[in-house]
Length: 104
Image 1 (cartoon, rainbow, N blue to C red):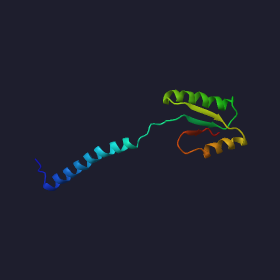
Image 2: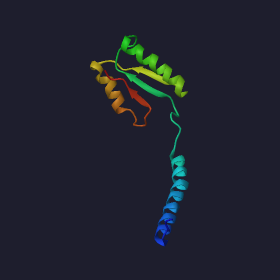
Image 3: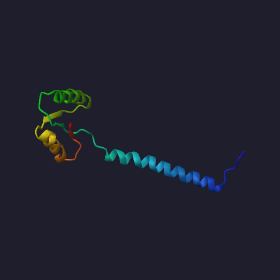
Image 4: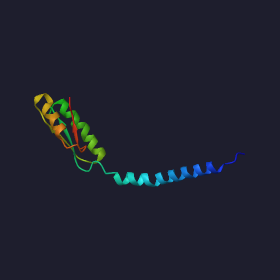
């Protein structure tokens, strides 16, 4: 049988206190910082003409995503400039995670 020295008991106790403190603090802190997403409709910018195959496919895909996340998804067509106008709309969008760009 091995004996535990006073230093080993102290280290074990200190480690237990640290783990208990982290267990009690970290989950509460994480919950306090969490936000439900998406809290508003998402926006998908497609830089191509409406009705084309490259427009229809994102609409079908995001219709399914919308059903899964329980939030509306608006698909916008921003044509012109070989996709530059749509890319600029994505780049200029508010960086809040609610705008998705479909770049070809």
